[in-house]
Image (cartoon, rainbow over all chains, first blue to last red; front, side, top):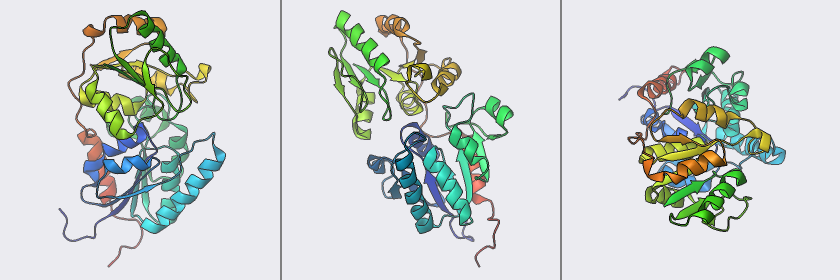
Length: 154
Length: 166
């Protein structure tokens, strides 16, 4: 498409299960980019053959030690990849990626999971103050919490 | 074959025990369950604790019906394969998840073709007893809506706020 600008380096980040499946559904938006994926399950590499792929330890708000390791590895990956843009579909790894991405001047977008049909998730609420943009996938949630709505992964 | 799955993170014994009970009454259907790393082990159905993404995909392809917690990964995969899916939402009051977002998920998705909701064991039995009446959706595409893809492409292509490289 564009032959005049350098390709955008994008760091695409999601934790496991539905978060990762939702990130995969965004792949057409990454077609023109130099993409690196980050998730928690090493087996997910097979979903993005031939692409740069990293994993971080899995963790959530109930597993303090794991989440510290996750944050540290996410920081190293962010410094290594030096993305122009961070895109995440949650949860904790996405929040850290948006936050660290911003520290190095990347723009960051956090897309809250389609599972959160009535409330924003904790990680999306936290991302509101650290990401450039937060999208929700439900119109009602957008009205209630002020995140942008632009359709969904469905 | 009925394929039951509780996702990778947490066990969901209420669902697996109900299914196990149903299978002990009537043994005409084959049931295979993924019960989670710390899930209780059923006695009347075949099971595994966890599945690789490849094993998961194979079971989705092979099964006639999916029975699952209301997790988006499984919902998206079942809809994509055009398989009917019976959802039992995890409830925070039984310690099945950190909060009740799965209730919101089923409340907002229950009218989609191919999605059936069982709030409890009785309702699950009722749906399982009339398995042949359950219909799949028309096969969801494996990409997000054009509107969302556009918004993300726009975000990626927006000029950086800092000094651009020469």
